[in-house]
Amino acid sequence: MQSLTGHSASVNAIAFSPEGKRLATGSSDTGVYLWEVSSAQLIQRIEGHSDSVSAVKFSPNGELLATASWDQTVRLWRMSSGEEVQRAYAYGICNYNNKSSPCPATRIMWPPSPLVQTVNC
Image 1 (cartoon, one colour):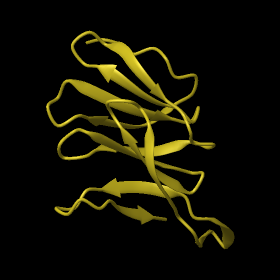
Image 2 (cartoon, one colour):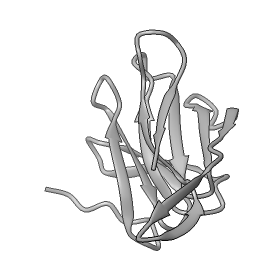
Image 3 (cartoon, one colour):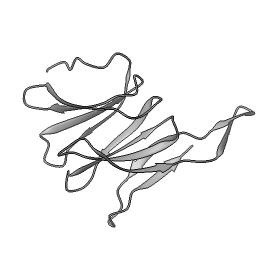
């Protein structure tokens, strides 16, 4: 067993790449980190979210990474460059315990088509 050291706050989401060689982590520190599984080495930092990252998911071919955040965005990143290639916004109000707040993006699914579906609240 190996430890991964890098995030400055709790890790909320993890995902293995389809081939199992990389691991993505999303954290309350707003960062998304990409790790090499065999060596436990940090190989890439992806930054752009302004609030906690709640979900990470590789595309079926491993070329893209989708991230969701409490900043109400879902972002697509190209793994070869770390470049953000698409951003979608989650709009709406959620009601928890009779309190209203903006809906965060919290889950990501890749359907058979090339589009990303998200589930909020």
